[in-house]
Length: 277
Image (cartoon, rainbow, N blue to C red; front, side, top):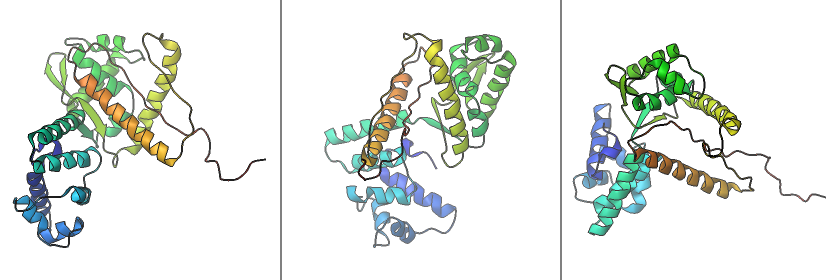
């Protein structure tokens, strides 16, 4: 089944989901409706054939029934709003949001190759660097890296990236990315992701003394929060990260690889509601 970001018709997406599930086992419109919390056994079928429409309040239930989470659920909400809109201005606004989400999440999800890809900073950095240096030898690429990596390692990493589908070889020592962004499936690679966070965090520590202020930007704040504030901050940081990726993807004439880390962590335990003498 195609990624949801390739759809512009929510009815078609729902129909494709139904057909996909039915082709892989026993599945009916009754079961689909039940999963989405509808008492009518054929309501979603009527939606798919255009005889009814999905209301805004029911969107989260249907998205959950189809296993949509994160940006996929967000895209589906805009997809429904786009399909149900009658005013051109509303359709335009929803379409722009859909295109933004699709652009920000032009991703390649890694599972079986995730541990190797995330085991070292070298894989994502070289994946970004190699396309910027057409015709460069592995030694040339190695010399551009701020952290040490040998020419032999670069050669092996390039071979892996091509084999795993992260890079495409277009000629002798000429590479291009198959997708602009790589993410990892949260179910498959939580350990690998944590290892990468640790390694990139250590690189950030070294960067404080290694580069002058004109080459690196490091800032932070220490603040008191409650559970609701924490959740809102996480949402804001996620939105900022997506925007940063979107900005980088707007440019084609790239000449350097940077890493940006977002870190929010507790410095104390939760203060209990009691008086302190």
